[in-house]
Image (tube, rainbow over all chains, first blue to last red; front, side, top):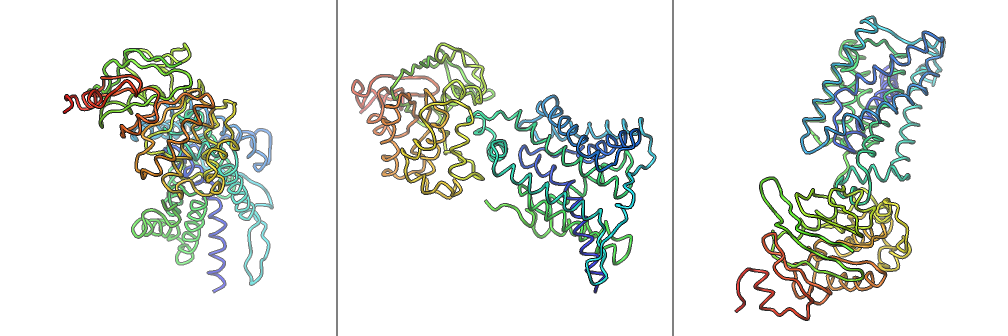
Length: 288
Length: 233
């Protein structure tokens, strides 16, 4: 019994990491119907961007998060303005193909520069410390940091969307981009901000993932898949739904792994497929 | 104020406007009438920058605005109440109105003056915009367009889907908006409503203006000839 409770708790914490993978994907899909196939590869890129100051300057990986997130924010905005805005339009295939191409370029580029050695970040004792929460269940300090960071960023993004001018512009554009244009909202800028926020979030997720486990230039597609599954489980267009979807995915994986160590990821996929089958709009989709 | 000459518009191979001339003067209400598919909405969308024109010129306060996108046209002082209202469904009434001001033009239209024009909206300011009745949604759409402090207000099919009593209420505010110095162009299916509300009538048929004039100068026979392309009976 206790070990199942333990599995659920670890799964919830793992869900925090997946939420960092997924919220950005949810935002770009919600605001501009962009399915960014290179989402996971950019997450890996962020991890490699953090690798440089960590290796060369002995910087604590946790301290590298902020500058890397800022850099990724700028990269996301520029990428949208320079490239992806040109692909937006009635044909949904164009941005799909463009990001698919970016994904291949990124993976091979990283392979060229960093080779396929697996890397990870070390944060010393913080990475292995745990605190007991009673009943013999330990909670790792680092997974807790990840979860709390994800929750805090979620609250921040949620506030941004509900209470700021740019947030209202993002929601208006999401509802009806043509009418948003009539209000003077410049979609090319709004879309840039959406991808910038998405990239800043995956920068945080990428570094955390590199601390939790290892990464190679080939790690992107798995991250994209988890992000995608979390978005679909939660339901398109709902940020808190995506967060919940990420937690459900995390719990499914840890509970599956409890049954047999190799079943973890498969169980996550099965839960995803079950949601697609029984409730294709997702569990927390906004009803309209 | 607005001067359109020989405007041409197309949807792919289908030509929707064949050289339309149009003038909107300061402090006046112009009504565009005509059957479905006559090109009235296409004409408004071309002015608002939602549709690229394929020929002719659109001059607003002497600037050529024909090639400008919608987000730029509204900054120049033309705003639009789109057909079917098109409120932002995930925004509240007040947020919808605030979005209307994003073009950054200052003037007398603010949340307070819009609420003074439509007091019922103030009571419902925190509701989702789509929870309102059709007439109230139309008020939000008009208020949202006013929030950009336009010099020219384009209204596409204000009466669409509304009961006659509600349509009357909506049209009753147009003279008040005009008296604040806003010129208005309305697209209207209901000829009687258009004749009562407007200072000038433009009748569209098959993408051309077939008749224009002040309501007092137009008789029913000429209008139905221009509207249906047949002589009156």
